[in-house]
Image (cartoon, rainbow, N blue to C red; front, side, top):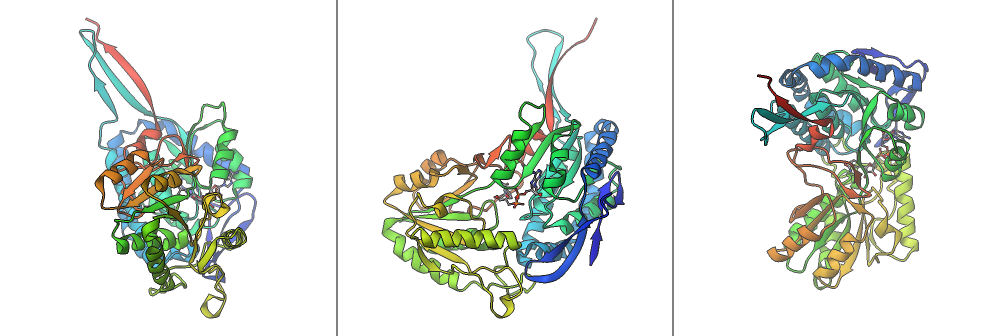
Length: 484
Ligand code: NAD
């Protein structure tokens, strides 16, 4: 059992509270994994101070040099796939295959953002005046706070931290208290890469205890948050009227639309991948499946058969296809939504209960669940469940399918399965989301493309792609005329 320390000013340190919080394996809830510091506001202030001190030198370090330093980190990270995958599975519950996929995705994102360090850090524009050079500089902001969730503990941290520091900022990262081990391993890799002290700091702790300090402290110039809409918008409210840049990546209720002309097998596979990978705990998970009336029954029959075959178990067993959900709170919330679905009259087709027998007795396991004949006003069609629950809606035709897909406060990801290119193009134009897929699962992403939601799924500019660095910079328009 490991004891995890904060990483502040280039040193591993204990919290001044003298307290630690224990973490457990969601597949075997009596197995303690580690204890992480239960930090105080004073610890958070120390970390912010350390980042503030490191900023002048780091921001003056040429960008390609910053990128070169991070190459060392990448080399260290790249050699530790198995260690990271096992840690993610142990503390999050997802299968080893899913953890490896997360590791590879995080590495690709980090590599892309490190590569950005050798691209232009601004733009040259023509001037109307002879002898005048106009250019746009991108400058770092200062100290930035990064707050991450438990569902992609490595990928989301890399997606924020690497562009933040490549752009010349210094940062404090607060990971979810459910997944501290992955964050500690990430900072071991940064430490091995010899990033200058204070550039990246790690503080474990509860949002309710250190949240206000890391968000509202005057040295903080930007906040990049990924988590629930409720917490994210609450934090944003605290920053109203302040000069703090905000980037929020929030919840979703992502629709998969299946038209009558679709390749049914491929669409069923997309629903299974989108609905049940990581036990439905991706922000881009498929949550609502909207199927054209003519194929609704056939689709449901095939989807149910595939769902029945999913092997649920401990993610560290290579044969497992779906792991537990990540902890007691998740478990209770998901079961509550399942209960609501039953009470509001949706047709439970499969699942709908916890798995508590045999090998499932010691973990937070829930059977993959499908509700059919759901109507759009039901709670289970409107709220983010964030668990292995698919909600099926029937659409008369394409127009109604698009209307249903957009009938949500969220706007993260969507997908359509069809062979009709004209309908696919209309869907691309009319779907109200930040990520749109055609004949691909809702959760698919690549690092060179922006990632972020609209409506209640996000605020501020998206992450990843070229926006990755852009969010962490401010623009300065320069007019330069040489004196004769
Ligand atoms: P959460 O909102 O409960 O917590 C997210 C982070 O915020 C954690 O580190 C938590 O400790 C911290 N936090 C909580 N209260 C805080 C406060 N008052 N001040 C500062 N920090 C505070 O979310 P979660 O349960 O960890 O993650 C699941 C949610 O994240 C889902 O809604 C999911 O859709 C969303 N998510 C979104 C994306 C995206 O890119 N859009 C990606 C992954 C997850």
